[in-house]
Length: 139
Image (cartoon, rainbow, N blue to C red; front, top):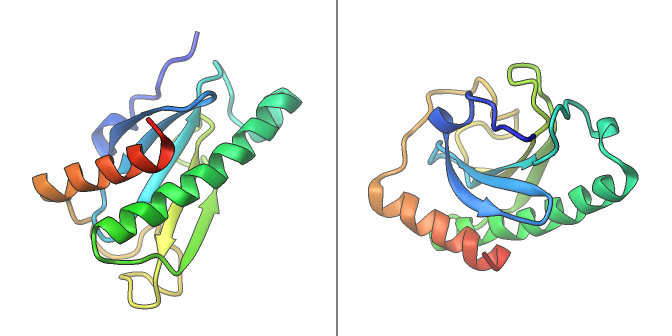
């Protein structure tokens, strides 16, 4: 049975569920950023997914990219580049980060991990970001 790793709730907000993945908004207002977590028990690597789920994951990453772009637009920071990564070095449960980047963001051109200090969303902006993602993902 799928269980969300306990590291996710303190650092992200639930957006909803796609056919394969649970979707979360990363709680760092510096970047439009979603995390897709396949709801497959025990999955740590993409190779742990059956072929049809690997294909579904790629499609959901593409949809997630559109949602990240929608978040950026809704917050007045249009996304110029999408970064997609499945690192799992800290949280072993398979998950994919989709991060919207701009040349004027806090970490450009380097990676977002470990760059600067996380900035919490204000209550209005977190609602705006989640609503934009849900609309883009048809949730």
